[in-house]
Image 1 (cartoon, rainbow, N blue to C red):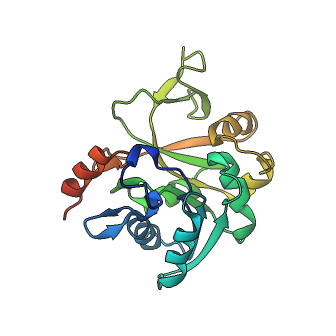
Image 2: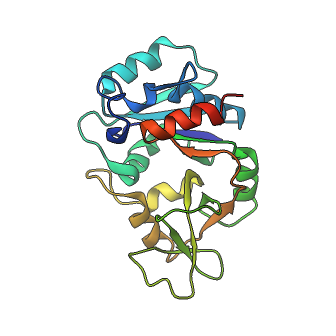
Length: 231
């Protein structure tokens, strides 16, 4: 397995902590979010990790170069243009072997999701993408049909007969996905591309226990996460 850590975002909701650094270098309990995420994906079996950079990209690249990491680490450079989640995935594609599934993990997601179980579920399915979901309250929902295939986005699609589930910011994709995605010459959100791909290829979900799961996109949620993940 390989991994992509999405770390290029502007981190506007984390200001003032991100006034002088990328959100990947914001610290929680003495470690940067990047280090925490890196250790989690390596523990799950990732042998190569790609990190995309944009905001304070030079600082993040320097941090990456100065550290010893437990796996091969490559940079997907978006300093010239922030490509959004879809463009980022497509842009990073050449850095992967093309032989292994790729775990995609947002750098601001902290959780105790069993990533090995996610990989196993994906490998035993016919999904080209498997999205982590759980039962929690949120206004941002994906919609799945009766077969468990991605069929829409709540608020953008008629939800009648569809199951709404929140996305947990973690997924795994098969290498065959990359050739199906639009070019990376412009920014685009990944779920717009996924909805088109799901018309011909299966994009399913992996339901994980709510457990400890936090989007540390705000200063308040980061402070709460420091308590939740203190042990």
